[in-house]
Length: 489
Ligand code: XMP
Image 1: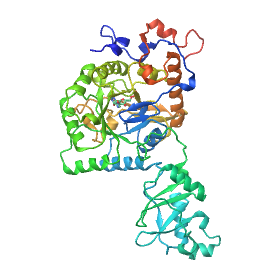
Image 2: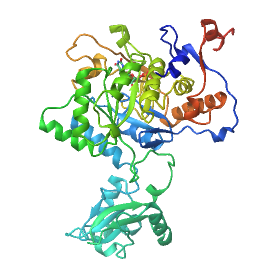
Image 3: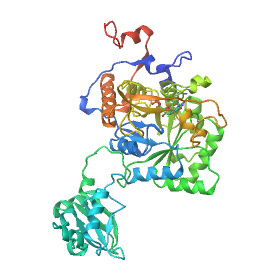
């Protein structure tokens, strides 16, 4: 039985976590620009090993899109109806792909004023003109809008549109599209099938590699992840809703405080057979739980791609206070990393919650994590749901645990905790400072991780797993923080 990661932070039943340990410096034989922080989550390659939590004050479509554009992933929360869940996954999947599926169209007999109205309201610069049979007969762009008001009011699209449409066939590559756009000096390229029907639109703007690190699927759409209850829905209507959501999701994250439970495991096995996406299971906190899930359960093996770990250490969690049970994130990471080493080295490990400083990230990776997840870092950003408030002159946003009273009144996530438990909240609701946009937050985290890896002598996440950790004494903790100064920290 492997004891490699546990030995790094764990002795005589000591449950150690971030502030208890430090990484020992290692020999660095590479230059800073050679550090590679990319990682794998099953078959998906992420340029940034960071996820935002599936919480209703952290990840809705805006956060999910922005995390994926920057190389990470935002896991959409599930504290809402299936209709709203479907809306969110659709928006994420359709965002920023270089092919637009929902193309705005207009009839050749419409008035020019209608096209102008559409352009202003949809914030677009061109509309494809299609006849009654939906065949493409032209394109009308901002440049075609007539100058004189009388023409604008009375003019008909067919008299002003560009009839000679430069188009591309369905399935064409990004490179082919770029070449045609460049050679024709056009901004928009309708995709037209052999039947003459409109199949989509490619725009120059969407092709520009503004986000070269984006997490994408094979078709160039952003990756989409969503939280999922482990309970198998008995009604056929609910099953149909889940199957519809499944079409837009790449990875479902089973979303419960403690997944090491027979009912949840049985439900998840059935869900894996109903749905087609990949699954990350969690949360768990011990070697035994990981060993059981990997080696003794009948999950669909090729779609069981990761384990999410940590229990009770989230900044808004009260599970450990309320129940006396917990597995702080670093401890849980080392526990599960050893089981992964022993039973399935392809499995990805996500260390979830408890991160408060950039320096906590390298510690998680050297304890065996492949990816980290945080709500705390992202709740105060522009991209999280909710408004910016001001308290005593400071800008703040609300951040609440999914086990808090406020979050649980919706009724959608009662099964995240112990079902039937009505009185015991397992989370709190509070304010966190407003911290600007997610780009700035990720830049700081990225630097903390990269620089930590350089000091540790690790050029990749895989190498980082070999770094040595040691428990720091209380005096050592004091000494490795600012000390003996006049100011107050
Ligand atoms: P951070 O430290 O980033 O942790 O705030 C976020 C993680 O905490 C989990 N979570 C909860 N755990 N009670 C809990 O015990 C809660 O109310 C709660 N809400 C979220 C979750 O795993 C999240 O990613």
